[in-house]
Image: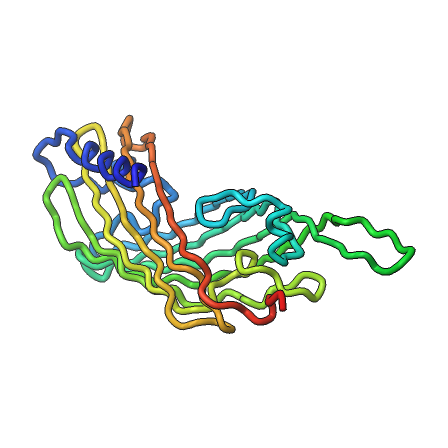
Amino acid sequence: MKSSSYFYAGVVAVAALNVSAHDYETKRADSHAPIAVMGDHTHKTGEIMLSYRYMQMNMSGLATGEDSLSTSELFSQGYSVYAADMDMQMHMIGAMYAPSDKLTLMGMLMYSRNTMDGTMKMDSMGEGMQMPKMMKHSMESDGLGDLRLSGLYQIADLGHARIHLNLGVSVPTGSTDEENNGMLLAYPMQLGSGTWDLLPGVTYNAQNEDLSWGAQLTGTFRTGDNNGYSLGHAGRAQAWVAKNWAPTMSTSLRISNEVWGCVDGEDSRLSMA
């Protein structure tokens, strides 16, 4: 709760920056949010924008809820594989088109390569056969992910500030049947969610003569299920501030907080039974 309160207080403090009376300038270097913020701005009628983003993410360690989980605790619960760390490399291609000043359409498709290093618990193969208790292993998956289609609809133009709604859907085009040596990979290693997902959100942008700032709240809500399971809902809150140094140069700072729900159900192909 403390981190949530601090985040929203930060947003209020940023939004209270002194502004001068002028219209929002879209051609300034700081008129767009930091590159990791998706769907941050709208366009004028007829404008088209193409984009490419590259992102790398590394995750390590185990947790149940907010508590850390040791390898021995994991194996004692019946699991036979421990994922030590996971690396994700994502290439995102996006396109935006504005049929009107109020509405901008956006589409994005991602190609990702996921690698995971872990440890597998090995049982004895029989009397007289000594096998190592643990065996290191690596696995990977790569390919196209889910297609995201969104509409950004402006609901307020305050001159120096703008507010728009993010209304989107994720189409389950990514594979959920990725395997390694004939064994189905775990949920995080799959390329798609396997479900149609709703992507609502709201975005605020503002600027004065020297600075720009903004905030965005977005969510991912799963609908239906895929092979008996669905990934957990997710939400993200982020805010940013940018300094405009020249017409073609700016620097920015972003803070972000993200939450994920648990997987609902189970793919029987991954069952421990």
